[in-house]
Image (tube, rainbow, N blue to C red; front, top):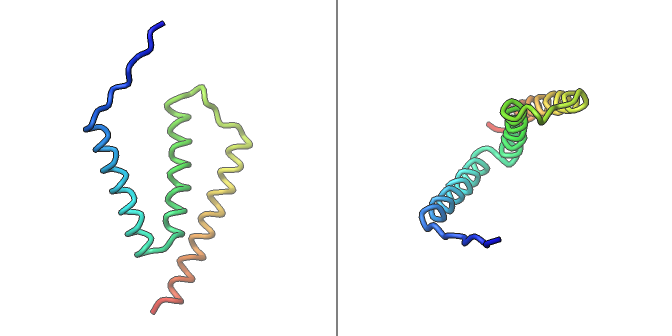
Length: 94
């Protein structure tokens, strides 16, 4: 069996580094303008979207009833936390 060579492609490396820099800069700006809670909520929503898309694209990865109950509880708590965060920020900022 022959071992394949790993080829280094500068443009792929450079574009990946540029995307990582843009992501970190955007996170920095969002946290500076809104707060860390926004990034956490966006991360949770991104995870749920990835789970939903993965079950659509790959039907062999099924979601059980217990998973759906857990996601429903998580979404409802997230919405409640978001409402509290919005109401609190409305009354604390002038």
